[in-house]
View: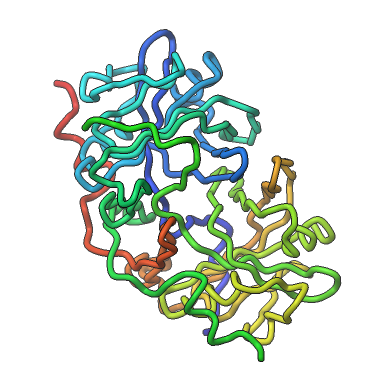
Length: 188
Length: 188
């Protein structure tokens, strides 16, 4: 496949989409975030990257806590709403059924089938954003997405964001089993 | 939705899957990575998180460079293979059509329709992993995935990894348009 240099702007394909829950200026706030990844297994750590100007960044800096809420396709409208307006301008919690776990400032979204509360470990300052690196303290799941006490991605029905084009897409058919289909290329 | 505390282990749903290209101990190496995210828009920056013991981590520390290669479903077998065996034990480049851009130690995978070369900016040391934060220097795309000179996710046909269960899945139907479907919840 011949390639063309298309500059240095990029997106990851595809991006997961989560709702981050915080308390900013004393009020609960919820924001859509697509720059998120697991960073460590033991202890479990997560990275959440947010533009510097975001109200959510302010909240995490104030409290050192936040939640990450993984939606199913049923929450797509709520997810999109949480990305449309700033918590400075509108009380987004009005549309969220909030519940709390062990942390005081990591409000979680009951509508999302998988949620976690996170305690800030370190902040990486980048030119236009903050990467918040946190320990995951507790994970909560709806019974409806569990199979044998483990999260079942088929039951969860997560979705992704693709850019440009700004489209949310569900998951499709299985392409293959991981740690399996590549065995055909192993030497000897 | 009632929730149950299921501990603190977690995965992000779903995870993107990329191949990281490096030069480690003087030899080109390619490894599958699912802990990856964009971190900054201007300048474009990426975060790639790799277990400390990985040969890929060694390569990035040696050279300060790496590539990120985004596969389509057509490369699923190659992607899985690159995650099955260490570059210490097998020359994975034997299965890769390598090309180079501006950097000396960021070999790219020609089979992947979207690739980028990255220059290390900082390393965050975590308990079991390294998060490599890098500037994206150049992005390369196959003509076949471009529409009006922009990457078209439908043409790219990326896939994701879901865990546990270890399944690669293609993208499915559109759930909705981002920055659009949530407008129904806006106040006033």
